[in-house]
Image (cartoon, rainbow over all chains, first blue to last red; front, side, top):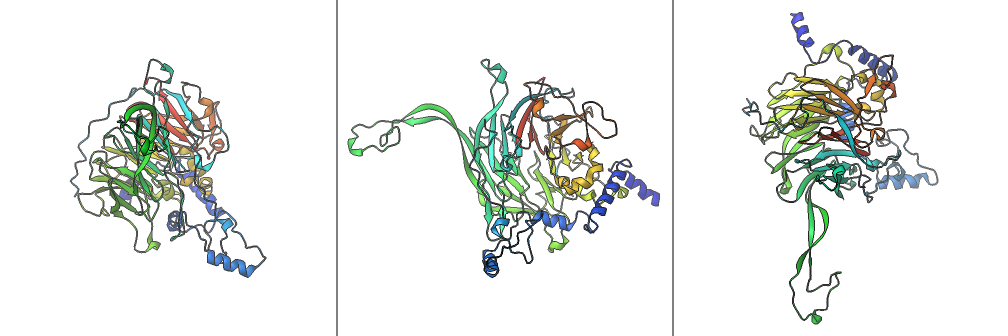
Length: 111
Length: 460
């Protein structure tokens, strides 16, 4: 019985052996670097991030209130690569949001 | 049970020169700036030939479309035979901000799809993340002269000074190519549009985002039909998104969509209004012993394309290209490794996000060969008949007119032969995500970041 299921999986598309070792090594490397990396590989977190692409958090009311409270102090700016996902206590500032500019220049593919 | 007649194979497109023989690809042209500093807006995001191959359209991250037209062969300029020159350029999409959802909408052109030509004008659909537009590109080579109420320079004439009446005459003028937006299909996608596909009925088209697919009529902009909806009731249960979709080339009731889990669903619009239940489900069984953290990510399909014949479809995942027979759901009929040597680099490719790069793939006109891109400005071609494959490079060094491209090789082992390049020396910022093959001839367009390369087969 078990040999039947083994045969079935061997017939599967993934090319065997020489490849599974390097991938396992790579996986071990990743787990060593990021031990808390998602229990579900490639699952919900990664998909949610994909769906949230483009989401910006900027509330002018919050921003101005925070500015008023802080008076002369600087508002902490978002740091790190996750600039776009800003939640919690940090109030996004206009500096955190990349400037949008419409393209008026002709493409360089033209002559 | 699906009753669509997928067994009927449509006549194959006329074989291009060299079907079965090895191609000899030569450099033809390169478009774009040479400077090292690439502005983000100049990054090419889509490339598409029209049905005749006469026109070649590109879209970029800056929301601009540039259309090239092939020069007619003429005795006067034999050297420019078959060259593509700029025909029209326009700003298709602008950046937007959805204030209600606090969502920034990129102007990047995700896809361009041509409509079959029905009159003198050319039509194409271009889309960004949220809005699809139908553009009309038309030529004007005549202009009316001799108006009664205004001068040639447009100034209004004093009506009391006009003593005679004349009929305006059409006079030839320098060719002017105008692009105008004829339809704007907006507000139908909550998530980001990844695909558009014109139906074979030439009246409808589909647009797909991460979770839904809509069917539109080209004439109607205020309504679209939702035909696939995979959004779970509870978003916490989300496990899969739609990555690409395409209409069948001949059967207007059939379309396919691929997923981030490496599966393809074929749907028949005659079976039900909502095609949540597929007619066919294509998935290659995975070897459980090779399962890893990366398995699902690298199995995610980035592109799906029907063959011209309509009998096969091709899917691209991170490391391979697979050809499926529509009559066989349990495994592909052909698998081609694009850059298998990357398997030992998955950790760093995950860290630098390259593992999420979405490569496209394409068929040649006769379906005998397929092409897809890789890193280091390499692109790969596979001949389905001879099973031979070749790696070529799009670079300025190989850009002498009509210079034959030399095959490239990546060395994986210790000893690197002369002319080979080692995996660690590959430039992962030079990615070829978008390629296109002329529908009838052996002419290919390859987008290398901000440059567009055009190569032709020597025997062309």
